[in-house]
Length: 292
Image (cartoon, rainbow, N blue to C red):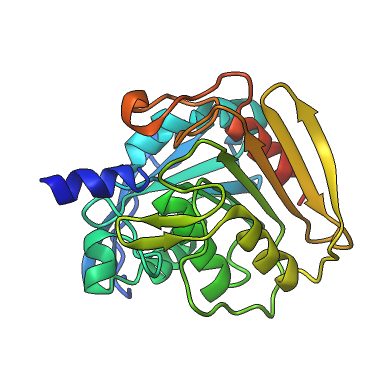
């Protein structure tokens, strides 16, 4: 039980697909299953009322944190309200044992070698068959362990996501396919003890610093070394690396914020730290995705 709780604090796969529910064309949340890597996997798709007809729509894949679920991610991020306004689809997949294999983390999926990259790739393909998806505008985001998997997908399945926006989770791989650049926005609380801003070892796993993650991504995207402040207000400061305008590397830090989804539902504040409602990570992420 202690091990399971620790997994929660860290952040919190093929050929045979199940048919889509008969109401997949309707507004609201729809549950789906798919066979991937010999496992039955589940995910939810939110279709807003504004996404009716055959018009192709962007798709945002939102990956939950450790001990989370797709349902919890929907509640935590509050993406559905933005989707209603903006007309995009949102996918909320479920990890095995409420976790993801992001490389050096986390839990049973990592221990058993679950191929979550393949699962997400196959899920996106299935959603594109069931819903009117613009294949050139599929985006990836996630929280903590889900953010780590978002990075892994960008490394191992380059081209699946047009842009990524991991929240409070870094690259947990020794190697990454750096041949294809990807626009990226990182968001993190500066008081996050689970994913330390300056890096550190948590539960025997080293979590890289935000500066190390930025350097890795900047190298992939061919950016310069110069750093410029692009936004500063209240608790929020956002920066951008120079020379990579087409595939930018941007990151935002929030003062006095812990291991939370900024602007979303606050989870276990006594354990994970404070949140803020002064900045919405989901709004910032969608604004970034809209540019790409």
